[in-house]
Image (cartoon, rainbow, N blue to C red; front, top):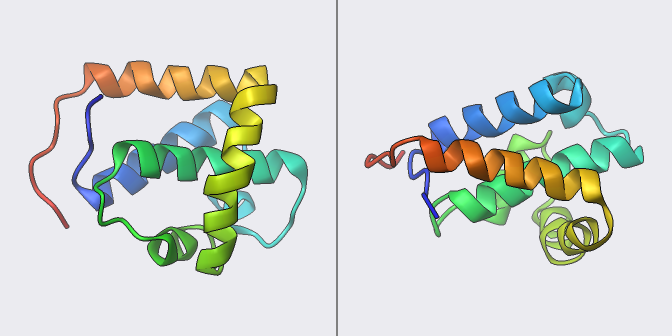
Length: 113
């Protein structure tokens, strides 16, 4: 698995992918609405960040990415929502696989920010 160590690049690529694939806007993803399609989009960003980001990328940082959410919300998303979606939502799994395929084709970035 290729890690994207540059946090700014990771954030940019994660949001660009989710916006493109879901048709949602950045503003919608970061809103405080809790519709299931928005939760799934946020969960996808968390999955991308935790799977392809550096180990030091924190839950509070991911909360800031997603509209200032509390770190415990992000922890719940990572520990409960993401596994549930990966197990029961074929569309979510497909998007994970699609991002993984794109990440595998990109060279690993060396710098950390």
